[in-house]
Length: 69
Image 1: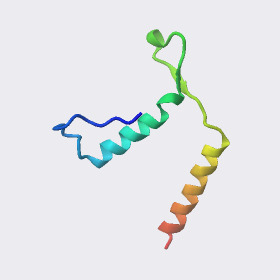
Image 2: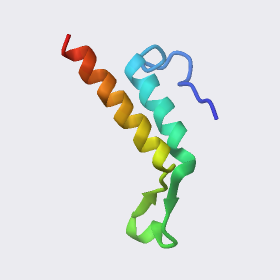
Image 3: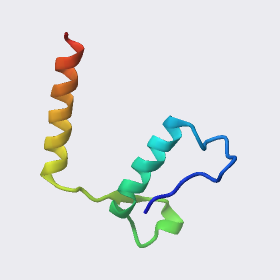
């Protein structure tokens, strides 16, 4: 699902907002509310699995190597 801010919106060309919007939409299907979400406001984010952790660690190593140069 791709979503964009309305034309003329102050967020229309804001790169930070667009990045946060894209990330939020990417994880939207992973969020699972508890049956009583309306009362408690609690839920959880389903894991994508080990591959998600491996990608995050690889990205962190890559970032650390670049910052140490």
